[in-house]
Image (cartoon, rainbow, N blue to C red; front, top):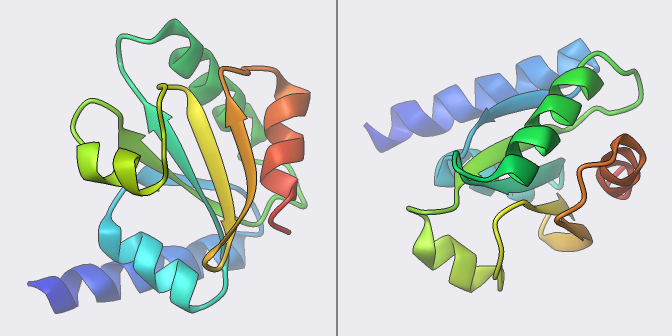
Length: 126
């Protein structure tokens, strides 16, 4: 079962690379691991359904999906359920966006739902 998840994650990342656009998908440890090991740009969006800022960030991310030059994947993390992941990345607030190039954190945005703020943070990994 774990092999299937890894293969699926690899295919999703490959498809995102072919599309040359922002890809948004639910968080999985396998997808994060594959992207980081391949030194790919990837972002974690710590999202809570009850959070208005998170919803506004999601709307901006949806708008940015077709923007050229944003070839990376955003994994949407359930803020309320992924407690170990929050500790691992020192996330203290929902509406946190962390951007990585491989294993290295290259950008972090907290509580900002502006298009320019999100775009700039995402581009820090490219």
